[in-house]
Length: 192
Image (tube, rainbow, N blue to C red; front, side, top):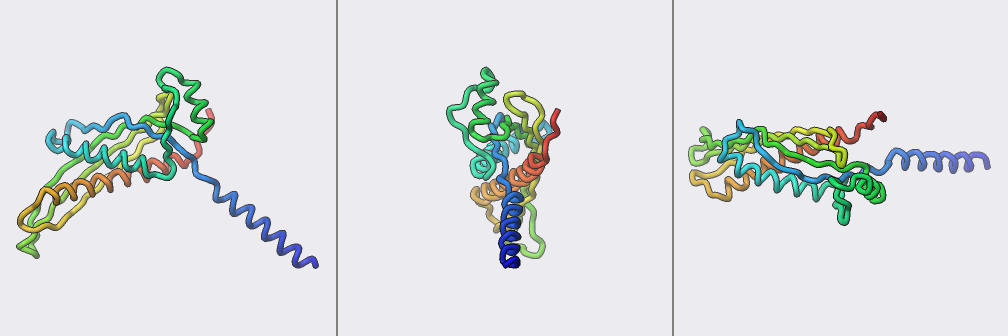
């Protein structure tokens, strides 16, 4: 009789500890402030790269499991305390105003020595994300991401080939930065 009771007790304790370890992840709200390019990035490249990066950032914000969309919230710029209460009511741990800066963007077409009828598009993108807590506008997080994408194409390069290479590089760079951001957000904050 004692053995089955111990077995049941051990099962209950095990179930309780495993559910405590799998605590739900915190939810956050990200508001995109801007996507800009450093002056070192060539103007023509910066213009097309920033629009692609912005599209990928919006896509990542919409798809990430820990990011929520908010509707009907007070304006955090004019109603700070009601905004904080709104976040708490919605179960949002923190909200951030996110600025993304394009730190590197380049594209080149290189011949492939082993395949004379082919060439390769090489696209490099580097980004820096900065999140300021809202409504306080204090430093929240940073995240850097980069990607180099190489796409093999034929002798004639189509516009779709360039689009594909740029889109893949932007997506990978944003994903890389988001990993860094959420690693930082997972670190418990010290109470001040």
